[in-house]
Length: 289
Length: 244
Image (tube, rainbow over all chains, first blue to last red; front, side, top):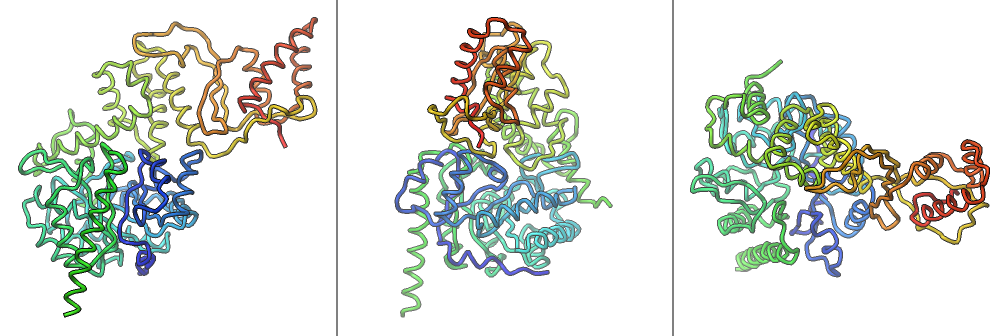
């Protein structure tokens, strides 16, 4: 069955931040919400109690929450963990979660969880396999899933291009796309393609929201997707280009390593807002003339 | 049925788990494979060093590295939840007795460090202790967020350069009403008293009478005074509280 994309994202605002333990106290102290929405990995929050749960309750009362999963292993070899998906469903309901996104990758083998993301070979067989699993998850959740284009460092058995693979999965399943702008850039360097051309292959109507993050340039031809630094200038340019192409789409800043003071992260979320305003104004002028 | 792409996937995962014993899958550049090997290892090493800071501190760098590598290679983690990885690691230590000869206390230390995490995230609430409470008109019960543990080593005192001597210690680890995880060192008797309150509400007088009978105490006055003081302290910490 095809599920409607979560229409709640029309009302969550346009700038978000990934919630981290490092600033759990600090962000709550702001009187005016400095960002519109927050994102969490459900695998770090579901089933807990204590002070951490109280923080989460407080945040979920103030901010719209998106869940961005890490352990579903949509491309993994073992059957979907149905019990886990049911627990996710309850968690989303309990905290009025606006949307659920995951990674178009796999993070477990036949022996168990590996807690990081591996690339699914871009093949027709893989498209069919993953599509069936996405539909299975959507049927349990009774909502559509958003899948993220992941950063990958190698492309084994690559029968098709990344964008062909993504598009095939999107059209087979009715799921939506979490377009990670940083990953588009990282992959374009690591696999030597034009990131602007890549954006042209992405169907606008499938995009649910954007991610943006920093990376580490290890050498000229290799960038590591660390989420451990400020967003780099080519990624800001690509974001601006994406807004021009797709319109203003809710955009979330991720920072998972070397997390700085919250005020530094807010400078970056403010920059997202500024770029959005700039596009908004220029579009306004265009329509006005 | 195993698809062609799944064979590659398993080879890829095998290589990450056992990079010294599994070849790089054909068609994949070694340097690119190494990105995955390093990212995966560093991620799990960081997660576990945050969870087990004392173990991380006392092991040499190469001991820690090979412990994490072996855990990652051979332990089959079942939990999708990241905060349960420390429990998987504790299970691995218990199952394999890794490093037990050099560090005979390592499993108990890991258990102690894991307990701190588990209590920090445990579901449940405890209320603020009421020191005015009547000790004799109320029944009391052990907090659900308190655990009484006996260790063969003083795990709470271990730090680098201070290898502990074998010595049985009784510790109560608990979370208080301010969400802080704390511990109290107990003696054998106070540990026993606490455990009597576990899961069932009792009158303090009945507990004392049972002990007096068990130990055949003749001069019960001093015994009572000492142990009522202990109980008062445990009530003040919120480790036992009046059951309603």
